[in-house]
Length: 218
Image (tube, rainbow, N blue to C red; front, top):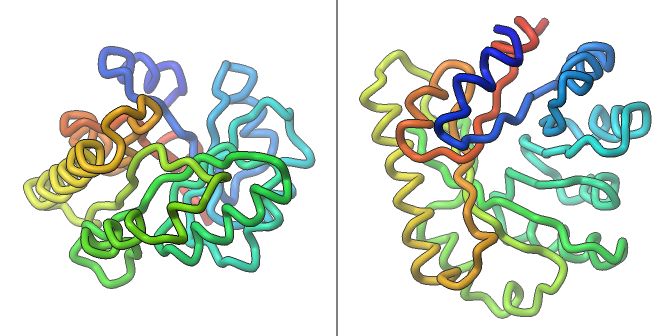
């Protein structure tokens, strides 16, 4: 699919496109960048830092993969949004590295909504425990701006819809209980190439699209 076709499809919903460029060459990213796309997602720290060095500095880089705490220091100087915060330990390290870089780093809490053990993320009790912890109360260099989740990889659209509905419910409950006055808490990142249309119908504010734009990966 061409970039503009996808943007036209998204326009009525105000859902933003994150172009997931993992394993794709800089030339392809530059092509989309020159068409006006600024938000790109990567899931490996080394690949992200290499691309950051080589590509225009106004690109907004989103980290969307499993994040090891010992790698956070490499992306802390520049990352726009870390979408995959799945443990309080990760949030603590992001805060530490953001402080060292005199930044506040935006983050999403990743929830485990799929019926697959391979997916990571908070459950409801873990997320609320993190938000109510003394450690979080003392964090001044992270800003939680919403939630992220991945649905089960399946052709069962009803199952996918239920999982997205659950993530949206988590967002609504967190908004009411912990972020009622914070306008920045507004992101629901859900939906990828195979299920983004359902995600948009269920309230996604960001979809993470890779192969639909870039073609199959090796």
